[in-house]
Image 1 (cartoon, rainbow, N blue to C red):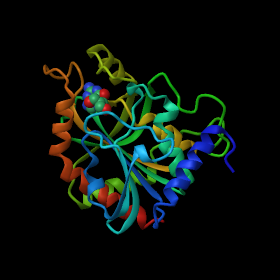
Image 2 (cartoon, rainbow, N blue to C red; image 1 turned 30 degrees about the horizontal axis):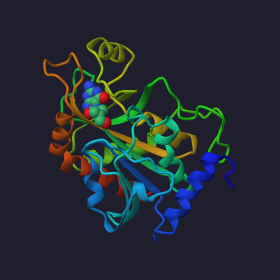
Image 3 (spheres, rainbow, N blue to C red; image 1 turned 180 degrees about the vertical axis):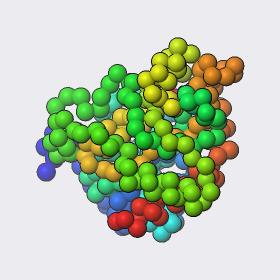
Amino acid sequence: HPTSDLAGRAQASADFLKARITDAPRIAMILGSGLGAIGDQLDDATAIDYAEIPNFPVSGVEGHKGRLVFGRLEGVPVVVMQGRSHFYEGWSMQEVTFPVRAFHLLGIDHLVVTNSAGGINADYKPGDLMIINDHINFTGQNPLHGPNEDAFGPRFPDMSDPYSAELRQLLHQVAHSRDIAVKEGVYAGVAGPSYETPAEVRMLRTLGGDAVGMSTVPEVIVASHCGMKVAGISCITNYAAGLSDTKLHHDEVKETADRVRETFTGLVRGLVQAIAHTL
Ligand SMILES: Nc1nc2ncn(CCNC(CO)CO)c2c(=O)[nH]1
């Protein structure tokens, strides 16, 4: 049974949610800026604002709704986070990743993380979808900092396959069957909220980054810690600094996410169906 304060708070959130749902999902999805539409497409949906859930942080970023939606996607029970809190808003890494802990205590063992990201790889263009095969934690932080939460995982968790090779293969199969062009690459996570400078983009590219964003890394570290299988998809919403002569603006992020919403939704729907066949 959870012993630490964090584990106790996560248990309180999970108990609150268990009392509100019937179909306990095994798949959770975190939807990034402008990508939350799937949460409005669930059947038999139960929506719960983050503000109602004990201990849940509430995002204040445009393009993020701030609610959990339980329901069925392609007939599969899922829970969708419409909006996420971000480190750059001032939340601690422990607060940003708190929902993942609560999901673990709900019995969720598959996590689909999506985000909007800047393209670093010169072959990428706005509108591309990138299957994440690894990440670089350039936030300077670690959500597992501090005493280990033994109820969730080991002190020194393995990170050799943080974006499940099995789920990546499923994603490629789904993309192929639905004729969706996808890239596969490394997501570089930065702290934000300022976008990167051209020099930082060149550094991240030299380090092997293909896309850059201000989320995902913390959630995936915590998901790996508690043994979840993770799939990550980045929607490339703009060129990173220095790769085009336009200045970066959050409006462009949301506009591009809107433009690819249908394709993105099709990929995620197919992935959920494919995961369900493995359960
Ligand atoms: N160059 C660049 N392009 C991007 N497009 C989306 N994001 C992810 C960050 N999204 C923020 C602000 O748009 C909102 O969470 C980024 C980023 O971090 N860098």
